[in-house]
Image 1: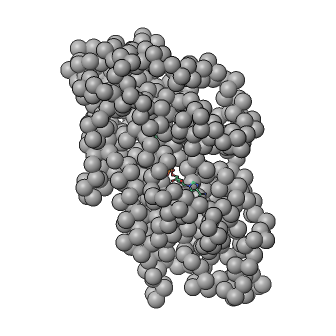
Image 2: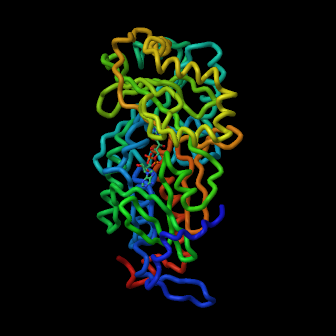
Image 3: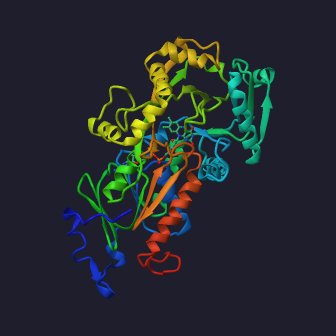
Length: 444
Ligand SMILES: Cc1cc2nc3c(=O)[nH]c(=O)nc-3n(C[C@H](O)[C@H](O)[C@H](O)COP(=O)(O)OP(=O)(O)OC[C@H]3O[C@@H](n4cnc5c(N)ncnc54)[C@H](O)[C@@H]3O)c2cc1C
């Protein structure tokens, strides 16, 4: 990644606040920084990072800027609410490492802070013979990960879920549900209690990187100077990377996931998933009894026409153009048009969607499904059309970018936050900063 050329609008910032360092380099005094680490994004990843920064280096001055009027307004507050066990993920991947560790840590965090959660276990159900080898593969993978996995035949499926039909299934005992919005809110409260700042309604519109750190400007013309910038902007993370002058190498392609609430929640006792298609990072339409007892059906995966395009009519021409001008988008369309057309058809036709759900839950009817708020996934796509599967974190001078944090990033928020915080603190040390615990007199 390369440095951004200085922007005229921000050049006046450091005048009078800086001291000239040895060798001609510009050095800021500690007091001239508004904070040590500035995090963009008040979703679960940004707030977990801020929380981890203060836990691992107490006294670090942390500011979070979030454009909405509260935490978790996008992916974090619009998802399935499932604490994933880690069974799906390739051994050695960041997803596997962080989900395995993160699921247990998150359940503990929820218990400690009285946040609604439950370890329910879940079924992954094969409804067609062609899915059986993949289901068997998941059994192997689950055992490799040391997860409690049990194989079930049709009669045993009925013991757990009397209304669900399948040829075979597996039950994973460690999957659960929780209130991710409350988790994000708790992180924000902890950050504030430890002396950090979480500012809502603060959209970052420009980033100016200097030899001493970064200066960001928000839509209301406030400027914040920091030693290190952490980009956790979710659906906008590639744009924020470009604001900083970095080439992210990926484009965020938004995929909407639509949900229905089941008006007869008694049809489903817990969590029921299909066998996922390994060609996609999405898990398929599932049945989820949430922490509040309501049951949701979804999400599908259809292209969104805006990054925050929660319905079909929500179109943002500039964002759509940005998606369509990325060569990877056309590669996806070429490779997966058949799958995509099926998803769009099921999005536009309630009866087609219902028929798809009936494969798992034969008794469900169209009348049982009430539209419920959708979510949009921030899926990073390479130029050649590869859907980036694993978490993607990139560093640049004075900057850490989280460029791909799809599911199970909410589950894995604690270990991801710690890792991003570790990278940010290392970068801060590169500016001459020392952890406050050893630099007495500088704690805020
Ligand atoms: C349909 C769906 C279902 C899912 N199901 C699950 C699940 O069951 N379990 C699971 O573990 N994960 C699930 N996920 C994934 C999970 O929701 C995400 O991985 C996680 O929420 C990502 O968090 P984040 O903080 O990176 O992004 P976000 O929650 O999107 O937060 C990013 C924040 O950055 C802010 N922002 C953006 N640009 C700017 C700017 N310029 N200035 C200031 N602020 C800015 C946004 O307003 C937003 O609040 C699901 C996701 C979706 C969409």
